[in-house]
Image 1 (cartoon, rainbow, N blue to C red):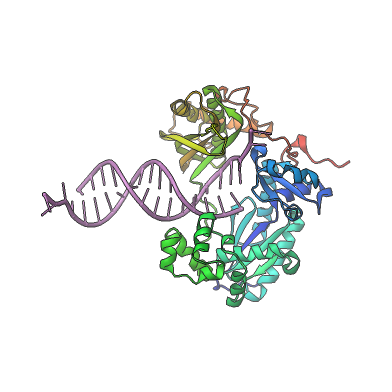
Image 2: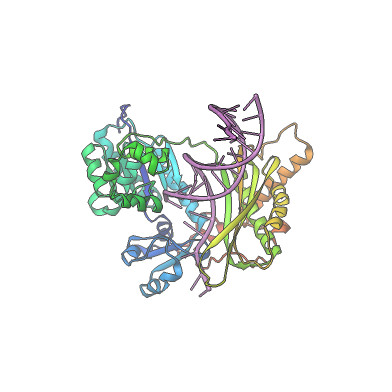
Length: 432
DNA sequence: TCTGGGGTCCTAGGACCC
DNA sequence: TCTGGGGTCCTAGGACCC
């Protein structure tokens, strides 16, 4: 249907609109057209909001408690994060796009890049619209699409498409130099992918205010002011020279982390150890799901000094260890981690968060059996597999290690979570 | 008085992303 | 009272080696 011609670099970014909110709305159709927000873990910040919530002036990433009044006054629907649901819906969206388009790079839970090089430039717009409509029909999740010669420019296009859904029908193609210029003039410097708070302040100081201004800067200047090669790539991408390639979808992760704020501050070593053991359990599960093993283990704790002002000024300290060999066994990680926790712990300190990071990750299928491995090792791997199966099919934590505790007073709050409609039989969506 | 040069590996920390 | 979690990439600087 859509001719491929070779040459001509073109990339698209497909981005789900207000993704977490869209997932929640899918199972509560009455919320269509209504303001909705989704909160981060611990019900701390607002991490997703619909256009209607945005129109009420509710800020992205704003602390929930600061907006609580307006939220209640306007009857905004509020949800805690439900990662089971979002993860599964994300998979459906990506799978749909993989069927429609070659070379999909999943960039985050709600975004992916597509390589559209070779599609007839005349047909790019129609093709993007087709992708959008099909994705929405098959999954129920609305998306916006930006198309341009580079990733940075496609993000610029996507943002403009999303801002003016009525005018663009959610799709914008920046194929010509003129279209790119117009789009960059309309894009403030802090809205460019790769420009965060620190760089934005610096750029504004130099009177570089929009994307077009930044595009005019020399590579030497960018190298000096914007973090070396990162800045050079950014300026080149703005000019339409691709520098950020499509990533190999088979690449394994370089680190796996599990970190959490506590539901309430922790003072006891026992509690700290339980929390760390629990996070290790999660992280090791993620590791095994990717059929990998890790050789370094890092533990960190975060304290917030209460006196005198309760100002939010966290400071962290960490300890790490390199294991004799890469592993994916939960109890091995726990064994090495506990002394690290003891080493970090100081009594009388108010801990607000902890985390573990597994690094030096290598492929190492924990399910496949190696002839040369000692039988005890084999049994441990089988044990992991059994535990994973039980926990996946029954309930997380159905089987757990004693080190992760049973009281768990430190567990995070999640008071407003919806059901895991698509991944748990007991929580299936019901039609009455 | 006057202290090489270049490479690699490691870690900490900063900046960014969603 | 109350501010998330999980990643990536890059640079600087120290240790070590020849």
